[in-house]
Image (cartoon, rainbow, N blue to C red; front, side, top):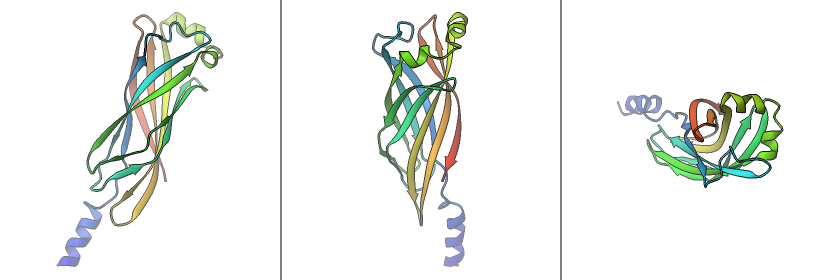
Length: 166
């Protein structure tokens, strides 16, 4: 009977699930917005959310957050290491520096400025471990859409797609 109970728990409650990583929000840090960005830099704050559905803690190391405009990397930052408790959520504020030189080097920038919005993507890559009975290492990669509205100066995070590299 005890062996049967152990097998049921092993295949249900103790099964290792993939943590969910998403960009919950994006905002400008400071008075400098992307409207005034020419050859300098602007700081964008990305609220990265890690939700752990497991019965054990998800310990993650330092990862990276990269902002792409088209196929060009326009900003990069390191994410801090941390720990998401069992069935808990952790929010991290990551400051990403956007390079005006790299942004202006993209050919479609003038058309996007005329249309009033700039579509970018934020790629977050976080490596970590979950240990219930055995230890499982995984790397969670998330790609989220980010829209910048020139009229209001607002940054909004959109739909996210998640991939697991183990």
